[in-house]
Amino acid sequence: MDSKEEKDQSPNATIINDEKVSENGEISNDVPSDKEGPGKQKLRSWLNRHLWIRMTDGRILTGAFLCTDRDANVILGLCSEYLSEHSEARALGLVMVPGRHIVSIHLDV
Image 1: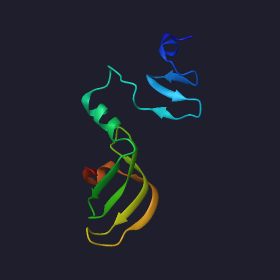
Image 2: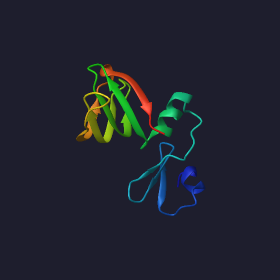
Image 3: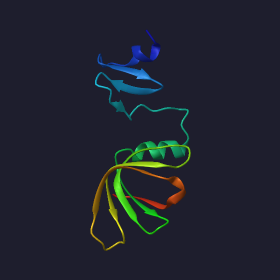
């Protein structure tokens, strides 16, 4: 048994790549990693939080931040689109926002 697994008190969880994975496949974000830089820690803290993303064409996308990649592409869940700040929302669902089209990202608090 791996030494990381021995430290875990939960019988239904394992540690894979410094992340706690439960029996049903959920990943816990509360496992600290000394290898992570401040940027990666900030992104991890934003997981499942509500973001507002302004795009180069003026649209605003809002949704739950699910993941990103090295090209700055962002995946939003339960995403809605606004053509301008005062327009009606259009439900989109799961969306991949290309990083090259992102102007700004705001964390909704």
